[in-house]
Amino acid sequence: MLLLTEENSYLFGIDMQLIAGSCLMIIAIFVLFLLMSYFLFEPAKKYLAARKERIHGDLESAASAKEEAESLKAEYEAKLKDIDKEAEEILRDAHQRALAAERQVVDEAKAEAERIREHARREAELEKQKVADDVKKEMIVLASMIAGKVVTSQIDTRVQDQLVRDALKEIGNSTWQS
Image 1 (cartoon, rainbow, N blue to C red):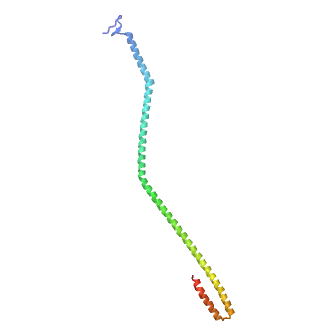
Image 2 (cartoon, rainbow, N blue to C red; image 1 turned 180 degrees about the horizontal axis):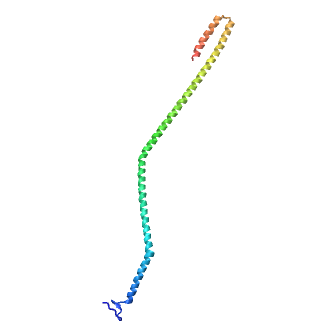
Image 3 (cartoon, rainbow, N blue to C red; image 1 turned 120 degrees about the horizontal axis):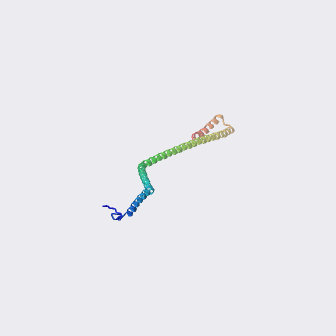
């Protein structure tokens, strides 16, 4: 029991001043705890919550970046599978274009060769005509010389005609046809 007497102002053998000081210290610690929680713990909680949210956001963005990277990887792998087909197609197209260009060059060369042959043929015809004209002129000169000789030798016209015909036959047939 608790009996408080004036002479005995102790409670369970503890001095009242000690109890009052202890209570006061408990109240001060409680007030200090409230103040510290308001000024220190709350900002620390907010900082930790913000950090937790930032880390969570970073993890989500990393996950989405990973998904995007995986989709890009799948797309590039599909493109790599198709690249052989595309390369084959490009080579085939290039080969066909080269063949077409080759055919065009050959056709142009043939056409040019044909033009050159035609030009050479025309030149030969012109040269042949020129030679024929020269031969005709020479025949005329020859005939004139024969006529001059006939006239000088007083040959009759029958002999003169026969000589011209013979000369034309000899010179004319071989010269005109070559």
